[in-house]
Length: 402
Image (cartoon, rainbow, N blue to C red; front, side, top):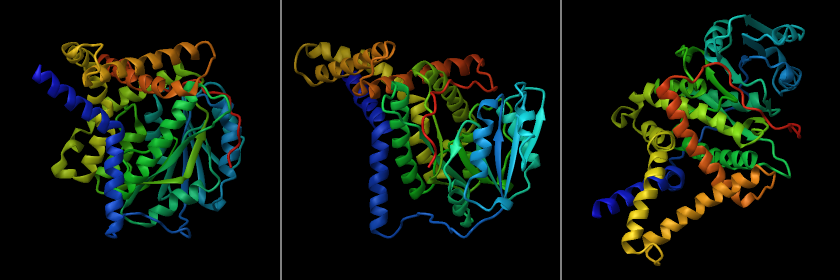
C-alpha cells in the first residue's frame, strides 16, 4: 500500500506539473530574472525590412484561395519585398490553375500527391530570400504580421519566429471552439514566458518563419513539420522567439469529432517527434532548451496521459482502504476525478444534442486532448498515419481579420 501511495503522489505531481506547475515555475523564474535585470526579451527593430517569401503548401484549397491571396496582398509590408510561393502537390480541384490567375503569385505544381512535407522540401528550392514565412491556406494573417514576425530576426541569435494562432469566436461556441480557444490562450502565455526564459519549444504551423539558410530537409514521413523544422533550428544553437502581434486566425473545428481527428494526428506526430528528437532529451548538452522541451512538450505527449489513466484505479484502491464513502483525502480525490470525467461525458452528451454549457467545455476538451494521445500512439505504433493532408472540417467563418 505504501508503494501505491508513493506512486499516486508522484503521478499527481507530474500531472499537475505538466499542465499548470510548469507555467507557475516559468512565471516565478521570469519574475526573478526581471528583478535582477536578466530578462531576455527580444524587442527587435521595426525598421528592419528584409525581403521575405510567404510560403504556402496547398492541397485542394480552391475554397480559400481568393481570401488567402487577397489577405496576403493587403499586409502592411513593402510589396516589392514579398514573394508569394504556393506549392500544390496533388491538387486536382483546380487550385494551381486558379492561383496562376493572380499577379505576383509563384505556383509550383506537381501532379503526384506526396504530402505536405514533400511539398515543403521541394518548394524550398525556389526560395531566394533570407527569410521564409510559412502559413496555411485556410488562415488569414493580421495586417502587421510580416512586419512583426520579421523584426525579431534583427537579433542574429534568433533563427525562428513563431506567430500566434487565434481562433474565431462566436456567441454560441461549440465545445470544440471554446475549448480550443481557451487552450491556445493558455499556450500563448506559456510561449511568451518560454521565449523570455530562452526559447519557444516549437512553432505554430499556421504562421512561423525561419532564416532560409537554416533550413534542413525533413524526413518525408514527418507528421509535424512545423515542430521538427523549428526545433532543429533551436538545436543548431539559435532560439525560437514568439510574437503574438504576428498572428494567423482560423475557425475552430466544426465539432469535437473533427477536433479529435486533428488532435490524434498531432499526437501521433508528437510521439514521432519525441523519438526523432531524442537527442534533445540530453539536459547536459542542451540545458535550458531541454528543460523547456521536456516540461512543455514531452510529458504531455508521453508520460502524463498514461498517468492520468493509471491514477484512477490506484486512487480507487487507496480510497477503498480508508472507506470510499468516507471523508478521507484519497476518497475526496477519487470522487473529484469521478465528477471531473462525469462532467466530460455530460459535455459530450449535451454537445451531441446541440445543448452547450460552457462550464463543461474545459473537462470535455481536456479529456479529448488526452484521449487523442492514446489513439495517436496506436497510429504511430501501427504506422498507419498518412503524411497526406487530412484536414479537419472547420466551422463557418464569421469575422474579418483586424
